[in-house]
Length: 327
Ligand code: CP
Image (tube, protein in one colour):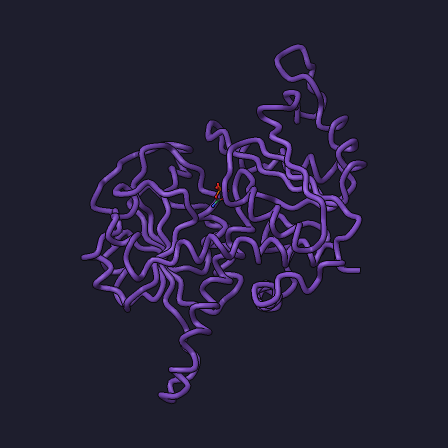
């Protein structure tokens, strides 16, 4: 693996999931793989899980990790080619990225969309400029349109839950079950990026081992390049019926870009709605707005696997770093 910015960088999703679960069972089995190597984690916006899980993953592989909050501690970066830098930006990525590439063996970058101009955000200028100029492998810690480490984690978590239930199913002669996975839009107070939803859709479609349904209010369509292959409905009740996994996530509008059209509280996932599913496990990438996106009862209830999901961020990051370090 050269870079990790989307599912397209993964040759075999199930093999990567198996690798991650092997690290979960034995975190230090490749302690020597990263010895003497250094990973840089650059953040242009806040993070809890991504930042810490990637640091833990690097440490498990014997790597030194250095975090740099570029937005707070670095010079304001310019990303546009040919820019006349007479404004607020201080350093061009063309100058900064090669320097960073000399300090680190792997660079990890988190950027965020401005949600002002769809063409700009979906061009993924920031991460592609890092890749172009740094000269070392790049791992996305979330970009303007995708969050691949989160999505790998999500597939790992779904697989883990399915594997845990498979001995019982085998005993009953029921074999391996193809799960119904539902991605449901939820209300939120802020306009959020589409990246977690885009990325989840891209990965579940590429994985191909689930019946995948996306449900959202009218006007919240996601980019077809990521959702093609999923069943899409504006009827949340219909989508949730018999679901095995419900992934809850807000996103702002894609077509009339970056807006909140409505915040109908009836789209919040509640116990009543969960009762219509096949005892579905409930997922969310976190952070979550309690009693806006999901009710306390659901988040604190037995079907919530959000902590298991967030804990699996370590094993996803470890599997990806390991693939990049692999001789
Ligand atoms: N899910 C996720 O990316 O969490 P953080 O924003 O805290 O890293």
